[in-house]
Structures are given as C-alpha cells and as structure tokens.
Image 1 (cartoon, rainbow, N blue to C red):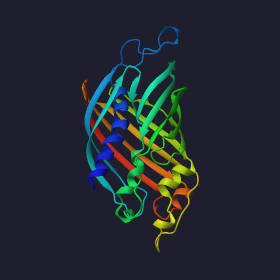
Image 2: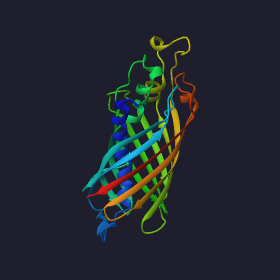
Image 3: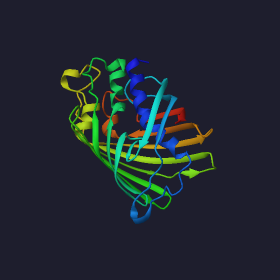
Length: 266
C-alpha cells in the first residue's frame, strides 16, 4: 500500500476510536449534568494506541488493504476528539449537546491512491467546519451535523444524520450499533466522482455528478482489558446511491470495512 494512504489512515482512526474507548473508562461521581443545567462532563483523558484496519475503496480497480497504524485521542475541558474530528462543546444540558466541529475529509483522498486513476487531477485535502447537535431519544442518541468545506477543495456543503444505541453488556464490554446517512451537494460529489473532458478516455466518459447520498451501518465494541488498556473493534458496511455508482470511476456500490485497536489511557 502507498505510504500516503498509511498516513491518511492514521488520522481517520485517531478521530474514530478513542472517544469510544473513553466510554469504557470509569466515570467520576457526578459526571452527569450538574445543578442548574451546568454539565460536569466526562473526565479529561489522553490516549495512545495502535490499530489495524482493512477495507476497499469504491473506485475502479481498487484492492483490499490491511494496514497497521498508530492513533491518538483526547478530551480537555470542552475540547475533544471524536469519530468526526476535533470539536468544542458550545452547550450541553441533560444529554443535549451543541458542538462546533472541524475535520479533514481524509477518506475522500482515496481516489488519489488508485493506480488506474493516477492520470486524473489529484484531489486536495478538504477541511469541513460546522455545527453538530446530539439529542438523546430514550436510550438512543440522534446526531445531526451540517458542515461546509472551507474552500481548500470542493467548497461544498454536506449534512450527516446518525442514530446509535450503546449496550452495556457487562462492566467491561460496550456494544454500539449505529446507522448514518450522509447528503453531499453537487460541488462535493462532482469534485470526488466527476470526470472532466480533459480526464476522459475511451473507457472513461465525462461525468458531471449532482447531489448524492450514502448510508452506513456499523457495530462497534469496546472492551476494557484493564484500568489502562482498552480493546476496540468495529465493522461497517456503506451503501452509495446511483449518483455515485453511475460515475465511470466507481465500480462498487457496497463497501465493507473493519478494524481492531488497542489503546493505553493515560
């Protein structure tokens, strides 16, 4: 696998794993919302670890890759890293939370690593910024996020909605199934999956993409090996709509991915 893809994977799983591992840490007494709606919040933490991920991009002639990489996660006051990126809690009360959130769309650079597409113009790293809202619904958590690419790449908008439900199997194991749907406007979709006339070949027609959707279902497990070590595993399946699959540079509608990680909590 190209070295650049390995560097990208470091960032992806850094943001994805450690907040789940933090769920397995013991919470301080009174960590629920305090008096007068003022949240005490979860304790600060800093975690390091190593992971191995496996997956195949949706682009033509892509191969399944297995890749080991390090990761890092943290929470410091209102600042945190989570599965979406780096954030700051603006408001929190009884499980309801509004956060400012920024992330680098590193997964969108997978096209740059496909040998069959190396004659196409390379994609620049997109950076998304916006607001995220978490709403508790019974035992579920409903999350909505709206972000705009800040202008380094597509200059487009996207929205993501997800529903998750943590299950405390026992004192050491948490299982969290989740489903999510992402909408991307035509600027983002065409930037990633479009083919310009200059990039067209006899077997690659020009393609102008419009708004698109993708949906993901996943299951994540967090297991406390000890007070300091946490084991995390996850597997997921992503579906792409026709606007993406109709692109001549895409040949997979369903994408499977999985990873396993172990972290040390400082």
